[in-house]
Image (cartoon, rainbow, N blue to C red; front, top):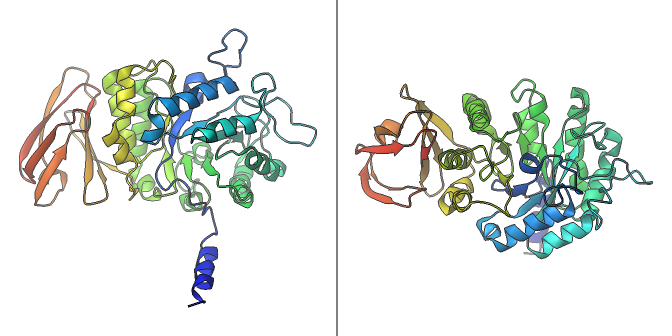
Length: 398
């Protein structure tokens, strides 16, 4: 019997090639600064909304105190514009001393004390997109060690001011460097977004081995047009993208903008539903201090979150695009369950869409359906039972 531990250890060591950090077996959830707060560094005139330790502490307080953490939203992610314009005398990145006087390690402790995780932002180029010091190839090990020493739990590595060759080398090198720190650090790669998002210029097999998630496409903006554009790109390319996602390796269509200025309540439900079907990271970028009750109800919808976080981790697909401008999306879930989303691209009035489960490729049997946003249950459905859903313009039924 004494041999068992040795065999177990051998099995463990053989499996730790690539990014086997055991993290993000379901899509990460949390809050990130970029879409809502961008690169606002004017703390003198806009102290509540500038990129500073106060903003991230505020958002951590909201996640911890307003029921977000219990729903799974446990990351607070710093995006661009956090650092000083200069590295320190030892060549290490350092936070802006005016806006982060306590330093990043102290902020990480503040989050950890509340059961939260801290994410940070870097860029694999001479500069970040916002013009701050980047992580050139010679600085990868230093920066990985610095982030680990601060107690960082997640790194988003952008690709501004870097070329194809540097990306080819740098993204895998940072993966190795993060693993070498011995600290589990989730790793988001923006690499595919800089290479057009599709093969042959993007090697998704490699990405799955070195990154936990990756940004495939353009940044989201605060508008329904932007949500639609991103949704179209992901589902138009689903044959390529869908098989690449799974536990520990996710496609990232970018942040949830629910609770900002550009989406109606119906459009907000639509983003939540589509991101759940896509097995997308649920990373909000909004102002949690002033969120409306409608936005909170959508973002904290337990059924939508459970669908997103399904342990099988299979990304969903678009099944139909009807001439009536209704689209149907489907995702298989564990325990023989599945999720359906009916999306209206119409701009006139609620549309009554008639269908049956058989028309959507379901096999014969008895089904129970739960409406994610009304909470109503419909039982005793057979595959051939005709049913009707009423879908608001730019809205969904899930």
